[in-house]
Image 1 (cartoon, rainbow, N blue to C red):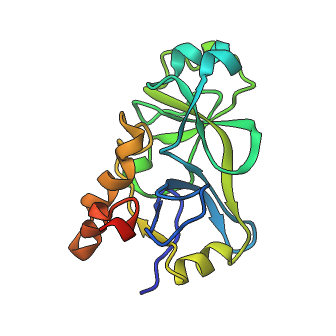
Image 2 (image 1 turned 180 degrees about the vertical axis):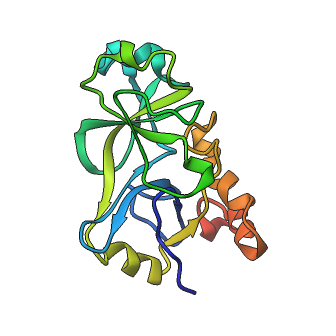
Length: 192
């Protein structure tokens, strides 16, 4: 079964994916094209580092938990922020994701070099990610063909899910047919 990769979609790690960077991860796709490859952020890896420690001026705008999230294994010394706007507007310092998916149509990236004051009152939720996940052209398609990822639709609350550690199971549980049963797969299938 071919799975289409698209901006605003989710990559959900299958139980077969053992890479510790992506084991049981949920990745939001931020960019995808045949020339540049794919870029996304892991949504369900909160770190122990508070936003106050690294980007104190943005702390008041971050949605809970107020920590940096491990966005992926690429450029972990850089930060990327996602924010949702409550209306259809496009505030200064915020860029809408290039997607037609209604669930993430109010989601965009934040320019962390901009003064936070220009976004205060303009955004509804925000998270900051250290690093990102990236694939060269064709690499992600090959991983999907090998059975490493499911591609599923995002829902509005996924990016800012209150309990990030349970997001993998939650996303799988809401899928149709047998894919929902994957959510019950134990952490170690040999212990089943």
